[in-house]
Image (cartoon, rainbow, N blue to C red; front, side, top):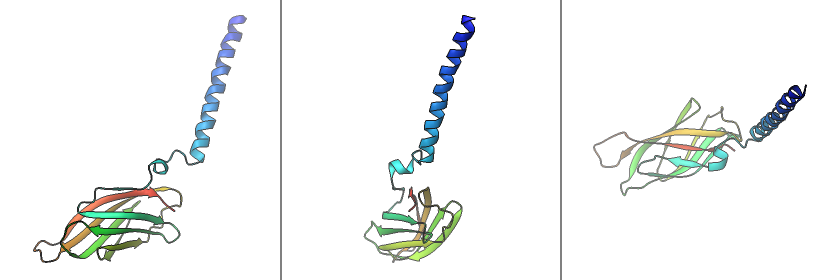
Length: 143
């Protein structure tokens, strides 16, 4: 009889421990503490020849905005910026340096993480090469 009671106490102890771990993990998930973008903040990656700053995903207006400047001494013209967020892609012409605002991203929820694949297509003034491309990623928490 003693062996059965010891086995039952063993199973109950581990059962309660596992239950507590499940409750704690569920609470962390519900509070949003498991989203990696909350810990690393806004990231801007892989843009060649451009400086991208102050990105913001505004869910109230359904738009992504950021400032962009060209790092080389030449001037550029005819720049088209395309952003793709969660299978929604939109484009807008812009001038550099300046602020880019791309709207129409209705599938981004406030407080969630987003990743935007951004492509710049541009021409260097006075060059015979057209439609140069620079691609990168912007990620962060939507507001």
